Image 1 (cartoon, rainbow, N blue to C red):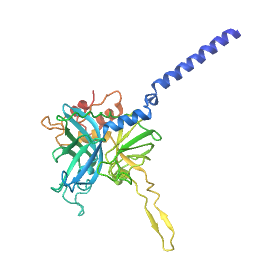
Image 2: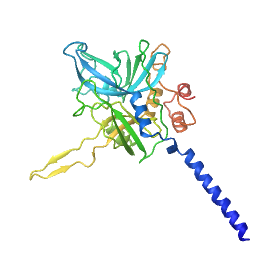
Image 3: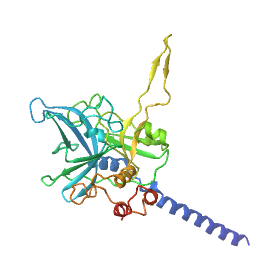
Image 4: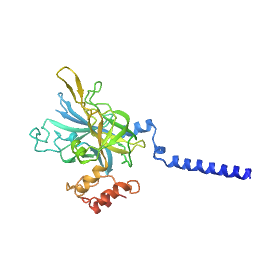
Amino acid sequence: MGFVISVFGFFKLLIRNFILLIFFIFSPNSFALDTFELYGKLNSSTVRINIWENYGTNNAEVVFGGSGIVFNKYRDTYFILTNAHVVLSQYCLTDSDDPNCVDRLWPDSQSIYVDTTDSSYEYYVSDEDFIFWEDLDLAVIALDASDSEENFQILEIGGQWHPLQQVYSAGFPSVIGNLKDYRDLFYDSCAVNAGIFDEEGMLALNNYSIVHDCTISGGMSGGPLVTEDGKLLAINGLIGQPSLEQGYLGEITGDFDDLNYAFAIHVYDLYQAVLSTDSGNFNPRSKFYNFLPRLAKEEHQVLYDFLLNDSSGDKRRLNRMFR
């Protein structure tokens, strides 16, 4: 009898360990890349976006900078995802009646160029080479790479996320030691802190919804926030600034609603925006017709179901987004 119990216990333990092994094999964390692999992927898929004054002259200088994400290619065209405020002269996306807003067109002396981390080649961007959404701080740049031997790496779109999930960011910050025209690429690792999806919160954050604690600075707008398996989760572009006030007697008080968190736009918002826009993104005559990467339905079922039930969704366009 004792032998039978021992054999039963042995097989019970064996089955339990087998189930645990299967769990770890198919756990999302088991597909995590090591830090060197993540560095390589971010390095080859994050681009520098510079706004130049008097480009090509002895007086040339960068007057504004941002970052971008290589997230699709069709024939000889690479598509770069970034923030709209990076390619617009002033960030006036939510209130076009603001008297402080100026003409969005760049002065004749300024021009937009995209280049790589090693600055091996620079791509000129005209006002016809990008599209943006007025109610969402996202833009897409089309780069003609027919005359270049550039080998960008496409950053795949990520899937599920949750608070405390490990994530990684990259971008070209304008900080001490990096205040040069061709800024170096900085990297960071952190965790997702929260998601903000209530109407009031989204309005206050201009539709930024993912909160994380990666170090983000000016010049990193439009850079990627990726998961441990190196897939694009969100687009960075907004940082919280501490609000401090000094009282009558000298005491310092802080605004604890603003704790220097960074904010990112969930990449799924781009797909929702495309379904609800009439910008001509799906016009076959447009260079942007093929800019949106198609998603695997089994991996992005939650997004598919959400968009399918969304009243603004176009089922024909929706099915084109998923394999």
